Length: 313
Image 1 (tube, helix red, strand yellow):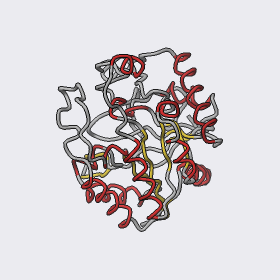
Image 2 (cartoon, helix red, strand yellow):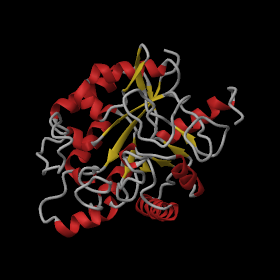
Image 3 (spheres, helix red, strand yellow):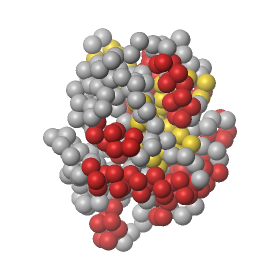
Image 4 (tube, helix red, strand yellow):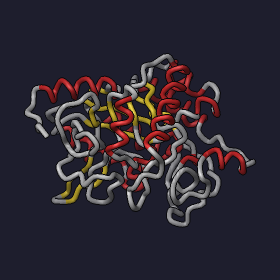
């Protein structure tokens, strides 16, 4: 294996943040404000598994990066501070996890100004709660466009980790023709590879089986494809450069979530709980790698790319 650097990343969002419930062109509720104005039942299924993950990371001596939906600062008092107190990196997963491009047309659902204002608010909230410099962004539900990266770069973000180049789906507004599974600089206004800039893309790994590229970073693919598949994709990626793993606290929750309001995904949470925690632990113990935060992966990747021949346009 030519490179043994891996970042463990955790997306901090609750069940009502997923696109079938709120914040997308096909959701039950317009956004989380709409959700909370109508929902009168239990909403917090996030705190307990998040605290359990913090204990697990302590046990394994791993410093991770938490991509946090910024409104959690106010809706879950003390949770973000608890993550910060453990020394983990705090990064941004949007303000309220709404999608900014349509899931079918990939056209903008909101203006650039609206997106800029939300990201500015999100960054300020996370910085005030933790006193960390917020460098990283991951697009809610992975729906990302080139113009979004231009906006976050203008706000001082220095890396994005949203792009998943694969053969099964494309959640971006670009073709991703030359985008692979290792860090690269995205061209201005696009997500294709371009010349160096302040912001770098730290994409998701995939497992290549012949001409087919299957996402292998974790998340739903960890739940449905299993740990050996995820480990194979990460190890394959490590032959080319650094890699990352991602999961959600909800993945290891044993609680039964409320109705997801999605006929399209009736089995989305059918596999979760203790079995997924065991898979995560197995992957982390099998990886013969140096675990670093995403901010460290960003610095390493920029140094690495500075020694390679990069495209001029």
